[in-house]
Image (cartoon, rainbow, N blue to C red):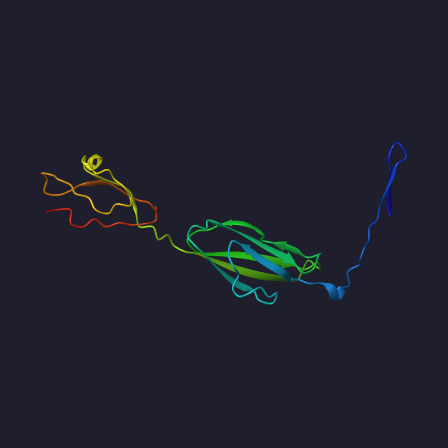
Length: 170
């Protein structure tokens, strides 16, 4: 018991209960592992060390939280992670209260690729202003006296997308 006495003699008691951890009580496992957003596969089991999570392209980060089974163990790797498209490996490590025994958990977050194949802009020489460009419109008519069209700018909505120009000479 700890008693604090204020200047005016008001007292407040605090009770502190101490439990001595036995040697056989050391755990180096998680009691829970969560991700947000997403769902772990397989379902969490403290003896399973590898999990996968599939997220859509629109998901740009994920929160990973592991809770130690032993209140005296430490967990590293919890946090919010930025995601690239494709595979993102996140490592969670539990160190037992003996500061020696460890268990690693791996979370492979698979972020889907972007499916947006729209153009943000297309400039054909100096005549594009007459097109009234709209990324949802896929048909345009252009009149020119030239023998070919010169695309000076092609900008996909997704910076990772590629494009091919075909049929630009006639």
